[in-house]
Length: 150
Image (cartoon, rainbow, N blue to C red; front, side):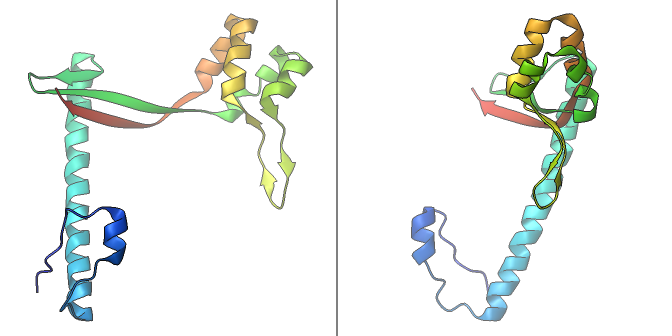
C-alpha cells in the first residue's frame, strides 16, 4: 500500500494528521521504504559534494558558479586544544583566566579548554607568536557545501 502523504502540512498540522486505512504492516513498510530513499539520497549528496570538492581543489577555488547557481565551500573549524597549551606560557595569568578553563572534575573529568571567542582577540594583542600557535591548532572539522540558485 502506498501511503498518500500530504507534503503541504507544517509541523503543527502533521502532529494532528493521521493516515487512515494504514495497517501496522503498511506503516512499517513505508517507513523502511522512506529510510531507503533517504539513505540513497545521502549517498548521492556525498558523491556530489565529493565532485564539487574535487573540482574546487583542481581549480584552486572555494566555489563554483554557473549562470543559474552559486556553490561555495563553508568549512567548520575547530582547534586542537593540546596544540593551544603553549599559549599558557605566552599569555599573562590575568588574560589566561579570561579564556582558559583548566581540567577539572564534575562527575567526570572535563578536559582543559580554551574559549576561542576570548582567546583569539587576546592572541591578536600578543602578536605573531600567539597567532602562530592558534593557526597551528586550527582543525577543519567538516566542509559543508552551500548551493544557491541565483
